[in-house]
Length: 107
Image 1 (cartoon, rainbow, N blue to C red):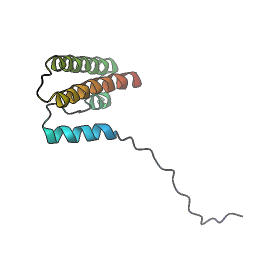
Image 2 (cartoon, one colour):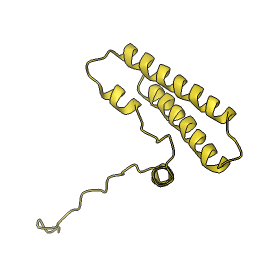
Image 3 (cartoon, one colour):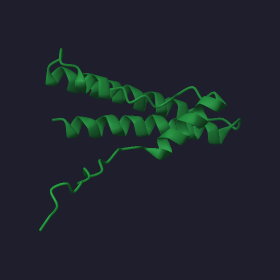
């Protein structure tokens, strides 16, 4: 016999949190990095005023541009603060990869 007044808890919801990206962004802000991950594709995907093909082309173009900028920056990494610059380049590549993954997820 179950008690009708038993209190059932709602299942816990999974909250996605990218700890490494958060730490990297905080470090970039404190060290004055020139690039901060901004997940530009989220606003594009949620934009109801654009068609799916327009969203796809826009995100693809911006991801390709970000990769191009990362390659240029990578080619010019000097001896002054190489770790800082390589972290910045890696963040740019990761942002481009996440944008492409979001494209595949929302096809």
